[in-house]
Image (spheres, rainbow, N blue to C red):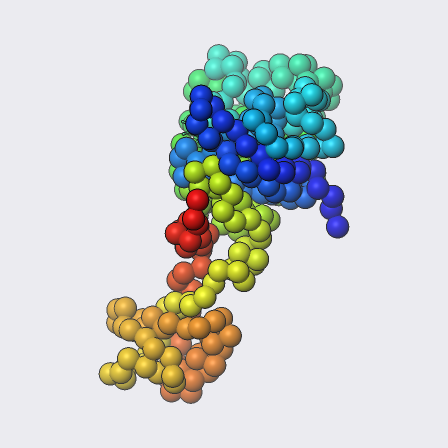
Amino acid sequence: MANDIIKVEGLCKEIKGKKIVKNVSFSVKEGSITGLLGPNGSGKTTIIRLLSGVIEPSSGDITVMGQNPLTNGEEIRKNSGIVTETTSLYEEMTAWENLMFFSKIYGVRDSKRSEELLKAFGMWEHKDSTISTFSTGMKKRVSLAKALLQKPRILFLDEPTNGLDPEGIHLVLGYLKALCEKEGVTVIICSHVLQQLEGICDTYLFIKHGVLMEGGSMEEIEKRHLRNISVDIETGLTVEETVFAGYPYQTIRKNTLRFELKSKEDISPLLAALLERTWVHGCTLKNNTLEDYYFLIGGEINE
Ligand SMILES: Nc1ncnc2c1ncn2[C@@H]1O[C@H](COP(=O)(O)OP(=O)(O)OP(=O)(O)O)[C@@H](O)[C@H]1O
């Protein structure tokens, strides 16, 4: 079992009399990918800044890699990579020159690391082009390579997919997940676009108005919150009723019925009953996405 690389207990941050982070507690396992999810202004960036020691908490305890960010922020930042919304690359230098420049600053002697990272993020063939000629997505990939140069133990990513097209998001998150798994990097990734992180993170933390509403793996969240489920089934069933085999349904479109079930355990007997009668070509759960849970839990929270 991996150890906790980040521990946060009763964290509060007030800025100019406004409570931004409210009594937040969580821990992060080394080598895991954690998604900090919430709408604009919910406090995600503030939490990242508190963890990396850029700002001080009003109260509460934080331990990152066994250190207190307040007193050992420098040490934490030395062992972390960070990608914020601004790229922090030199626009008039090439991708390669940027990585060579930052390698020198970080004390990374072997240029093989830059080569390996540019290849991992699909940027090797563009290494000699200047950053100013790159699209947002290409800049983002070089920024990620830069953040990973010194083999950080923790990678903080603040909205890393902003400005990327759907294909770019898929590629960048895919590369990132593979690389971090290989190198055992712990990743904290902030996003307000919940669907993008579905399937990427080991743990999800839902933030709303500075409050941590829920935290856990997708399975844990599902177990705690999935009550009734909606399932769309593509089938040839044509009976003019609203209940089949004891399960209520409505017709969504030709050959697609939406069943309302009490639990996932109902899916197999329902499909078996349908298959006895006719064909079934597909079955999709409709209300178990991250976003569904976020809104379900957000609606339940009583601040
Ligand atoms: N230095 C500051 N002074 C005043 N208010 C601040 C400051 N920093 C953050 N805030 C406020 O704190 C709240 C949370 O901001 P934060 O940037 O942490 O949210 P976020 O969840 O990262 O949002 P986004 O998704 O837009 O990046 C916002 O209402 C913001 O206006």
